[in-house]
Image 1 (cartoon, rainbow, N blue to C red):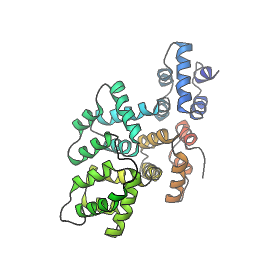
Image 2: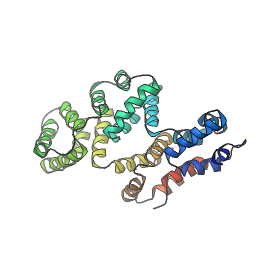
Image 3: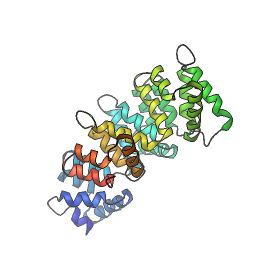
Image 4: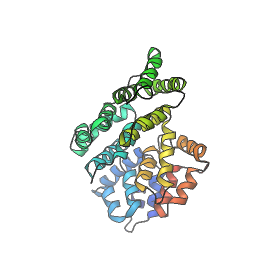
Length: 296
C-alpha cells in the first residue's frame, strides 16, 4: 500500500512528503528495497523523474543512508567547481570517530576514491593537516587528568603567550584529545588566560583554518549548539543557504534534533520551527518542518 501511495502514476507530493518524513531512515531503506522488488526499478530514480527543485533534492537526501549521505556530500564538496570547505569542516568536526571511519569506508566504495587522497589533493597547509588528523577518527578516549593543566598551558604558550603562533600545537591538541578532555582543558585555559580559547583562535588564525578550529572547539563543547548556530546562519541572512539547511536537518533529524531545537531557542529567543517556516515555502518547507518535529 505504501509503495502504491508513493508513486501512483501522477505524483502526490503531499503523500510523498508525509510518508517519507514520518519514517526513520532504516524504514525508508526498507521501502526502497520493497519498491525495487515489486517494480523492478529504483525508487529514488522514479522519485527524481517526478519531482523537482529543492523538494527533489531533499527527498533524495532522505532516501540515502546517513553514512552514504555524508560520503556523497564530501565527494560533492571536493569534486565540484572549487572546494566547499564549509562542508568538509562541518562533517569532519561534528561526527564521532566511529562515524568518520564508516564514512571513509563508504566513500571508497561508493565514490570511487580515497577520501584522504581527495582531501589532500584539494587542500593545503595547516588546514589540510587538521582535516587529515580528524579523518583518522582516532581521538584519545576519556579524560587524562594529568594532561589537562599541561594542555591548557601549551595552548596558551602556543598562542597568546608568545609572538607568533605555534599552530602545530593547537592542531595536535584539538585534533587528538577527546571532547570530554577538551572541555576541561578549555575551562583551565580560561582560568589561565582570562579569556575563552575561541578568542585566542580568532586572534591568532584566519580563513578556513580559523573556521575549522572554531568548529572543533564548538563541537567539543556542544554539538547541538554548534548546529543551532549553523542553522541560524543558514537562514538569518540575505537569501537562505538551502544546501546547509537541508544537510543539517537531514543528518541530525534522528540524532539530536530535540537538543538542537532547545539550543536554538536558548541562543536566539525564537523557535527553530518558526524560523524555518518564515524562511522556506511549499512542500520543501513543509518537509523541513516535519523533520524539525515541533514548535517550541
